[in-house]
Image (cartoon, rainbow, N blue to C red; front, side, top):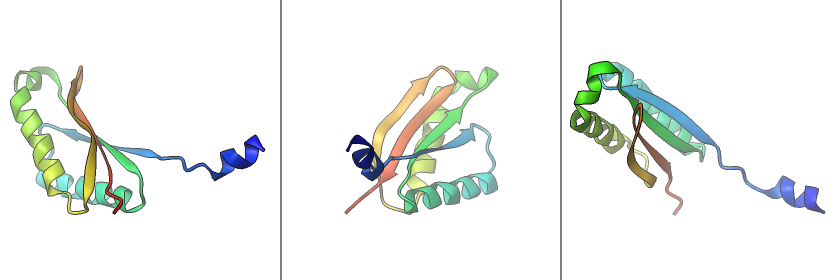
Length: 99
């Protein structure tokens, strides 16, 4: 009985996308397309912005870059975890908006 119930559970997969502070515009377009593809498939997306060395001195810039990236995603989504600081940079988790 337990096995049958377990097989009917929906596992929510979390896909990851990593950005850098200096990621180029073309690469950002590609990663945006990847995020949209993951959201279409119904997966959650964890967007990480990593900072290295002296980039850590410009946290406000990094946060803005991440906000801009999330703003450009065309598919409707809901933010499951707001932009949060972690030792290597910032991250946020978004999920498809089920209407």
